[in-house]
Image 1 (cartoon, rainbow, N blue to C red):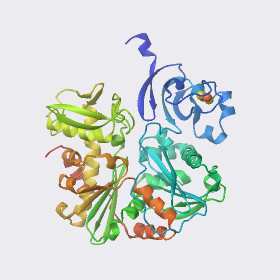
Image 2 (cartoon, rainbow, N blue to C red):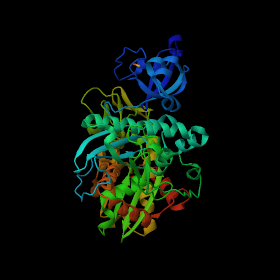
Image 3 (cartoon, rainbow, N blue to C red):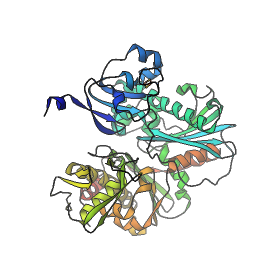
Image 4 (cartoon, rainbow, N blue to C red):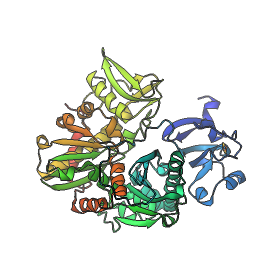
Length: 505
Ligand code: FES
C-alpha cells in the first residue's frame, strides 16, 4: 500500500462507502451544491455526521441550532475527516427513489384537519410523506432517508444506541427530518407550513418509540412486552416539531406489538385484505420484514429481522434504488445484461437487482445451490460486482422473509396452494421480479404467479386515517384483532430458516 493510500479513510455517505483522505473536508464528497462556496455561511451542506471528525467549530455553532447540534448535525464544509465516519444528508433524496406512489385513494372525506394535513411514514431506512388539501387533493409529496441510520442500519442497532445513551439525539434526528419534510412540502405547494394543522405519523413500533422518546428497553428483550402501543393524539410542540403551530395535532396510529407496528396496521387498512374473506398473505419486505396472513377471517402477523441487504446496505457495491443503481438483470447468450436506473453508467446495485443477479447466476451455474461461488466474485456490469460475502448476506435475508411466510402458513394449518394472493407492500416489493424472488427462495416459488404489488401501503393507510375520521377506529380494530406469532424462539421458524438458506429449486 502506498503512503497516500494509508491516509485514506472510509466514509459511509448515505449508506454507500466512499474513500477520503484524512484531513479533507467532508464536503469533498458532497453531491449537493455548496452555494456559499463552502464558507460555512449558507447552511446548505447540513448533514448528520458520526465518527472520527474534527470538533465542532465556532462557525458551525453560529449556523446550527442547539437541537441540531445535539442531533449530530454538522456543516460538511467545516468538518474534517480524522478517521472512519458516516454522513447522512438531511435531504438526501437527490436521485433516490423513495416510494411515494400507492393505490389511488377513493374513500369518504371527513378529514382530521381543517386546512392542510400531512401523512407520513417513518421507515427504518426511508421516510415518505404527502401533503393534502381539505378536499382530499394531494398537493405535494416528499421523501428522504431516515437520518437515524447513522446510529445503525436496522431496528435492533437503533434500540441499542438509544439504550446506550443516544435516545435524545435519535429523537431529535427524526424530529428534525419531519420538520424538514414539512417545510419542503409546504414550499412545494406554496403554502405556509404553519397552516398544516394535522399530521398522521406511522412507522414500526421502534420508530414511534424513538420519535416519542419512549423507553425502548422493553423492545430489547423477550417477552417484548410493551405498554405503549399508541393510537394517540399528541401536540406538535410536545414532540418538539417546530415547523407547525404548537397546537397542531399529531396522530400516531395503533401498533400491534413490539415488532409489528403501525406501518403494518396502515398497510393492512389500505390493502383491505382483512375484509375480503379470502386467504391472503401480505409482506412488507424492508429492513424489518413484517408479514400478515388472513385466513377464514383470522389475522395473524409476525416480523423478522431481514436486515438491510435488500435496501443495498451491507452489500459490497450495494446502494438504494437511485440513479446509477442496477435494478434489473437478465441472462442473454449466457452472459448477464444489466439495466441501470437513469440509463447511465452503473455505480452500484439495489435490492431488485440483487435478486435478479442471484437468480441469473444460479441459471448460469456461477453459484451452486449452497450459495458457493467458484470465483470469489461475479461481474454484473463493470465496475459492479457481486461477492461471495454478498451472496451470504442475501441468503440470510431471503431466508428470514420466506421462513416468516412459511411459519405463518404452517401455524394456521394453511397449505401454500390455498393462498389466493401474496400482496407485496413497500419500496423494495414494488420493483421486485416475482419469478426471480421465487427462484432464489425469497418468497415461496408457488406464489410467484400470485403476487400483487400495492406500493407504499403504510403511507396510503396513514393517508386514509388523515382523510377520514372513522378510519382510525378501523385501524384500531385491525390492530386489536391481530394474533401475533412470535418467531424468535419458534422451532418451526428456525427449521424453515435453516432450510431456506439454500437456493434449491
Ligand atoms: S456550503 Fe454553505 S455552509 Fe457549507
